[in-house]
Image (tube, rainbow, N blue to C red; front, side, top):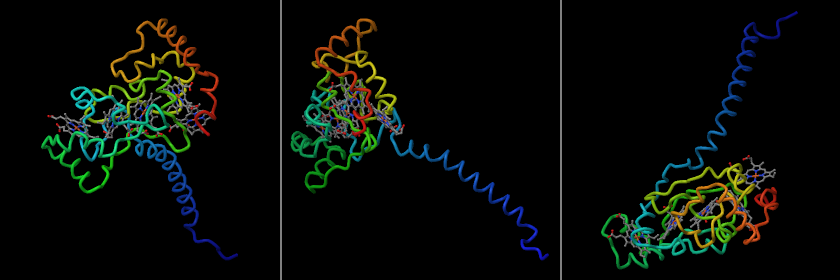
Length: 220
Ligand code: HEC
Ligand code: HEC
Ligand code: HEC
Ligand code: HEC
Ligand code: HEC
């Protein structure tokens, strides 16, 4: 019987099986890593086209978050301000730095500033700012001390586990609505006192705790 395959065909098959296996392992290892690096890391400042300093505007200038994030109490999104909002001051107040000149240039040319997103959820997750902010969840609980940041970073992982940690027991994190924009506010130091305050607020704000852990609340 004639030889159908050349003598080295066995070693080729062995090689192909190994290469295929190694490729599969690499994909399994690399894909989640890619998914992570394409998302911002917690605590790492995100570079912006203009170095807009939150700390200076919030503390020295004394601006309220709602001056710029105008829809945070009324809609899903907080919204990032257009150049027009900056020009309310910087048309007169030209600090003379290239950074502020870039704001003026954006206004003169009509080209919006291309701010990079810092916090971003996947499209299949539903999130709503107003539901949190009008029910006693403070900005700083999710975003950290924005009044101390020169550059903004993602302060929490924004994973499903992180959302659920609070949704299972919101009393651990709630504060009076009057304190939502207070960056320095801390949950009560005594855990029992915080839980008691939280329970009172869950009641006062009519928070439906059963709804909070249902899949359809965040995946619709
Ligand atoms: C004068 C306008 C202004 C004020 C006041 C202001 N911000 Fe901002 N904020 C911006 C701009 C512009 C950006 C986008 C650039 C950046 O991320 O640095 C931004 C970005 C953010 C982001 C990140 C958005 C993202 O992409 O995830 C958060 C969170 C935020 N602001 C929270 C706050 C909080 C909390 C306050 C009040 C303590 C506040 N801001 C006050 C203008 C403002
Ligand atoms: C209510 C007035 C007001 C608004 C609105 C405002 N700023 Fe300012 N901004 C100031 C003041 C005051 C300073 C500090 C001036 C100084 O240092 O003498 C400043 C400083 C700055 C600086 C320079 C910081 C530095 O030292 O390099 C940048 C950049 C800047 N603002 C960007 C922006 C941007 C972008 C917006 C819109 C998202 C904005 N500002 C909105 C008042 C304002
Ligand atoms: C319960 C947690 C939570 C609270 C409280 C919260 N945020 Fe956010 N914020 C997020 C998440 C999550 C995103 C990303 C949303 C997305 O990608 O759909 C975000 C995004 C943003 C953005 C980017 C633009 C946008 O609307 O997506 C800004 C600006 C912002 N938040 C400001 C604020 C301010 C100001 C407050 C307080 C008044 C606040 N946030 C309170 C979780 C929170
Ligand atoms: C620190 C606590 C806390 C964290 C963290 C938190 N939530 Fe909530 N969330 C609440 C509370 C309290 C309510 C209840 C408000 C109400 O009764 O309408 C709520 C309500 C909601 C609702 C219902 C809104 C509506 O209109 O029905 C959605 C959706 C939601 N959260 C999504 C998320 C997602 C997604 C995350 C994570 C990215 C998250 N939440 C993180 C406390 C939190
Ligand atoms: C409080 C909001 C919230 C609730 C309730 C919730 N999820 Fe999620 N879910 C998220 C967020 C946020 C992510 C995105 C996680 C990420 O990007 O890392 C997510 C991601 C997922 C994913 C993608 C895979 C993964 O783990 O990242 C699946 C599948 C999923 N959720 C299923 C469910 C199911 C099933 C339920 C009900 C038992 C549920 N979720 C309830 C917020 C929620």
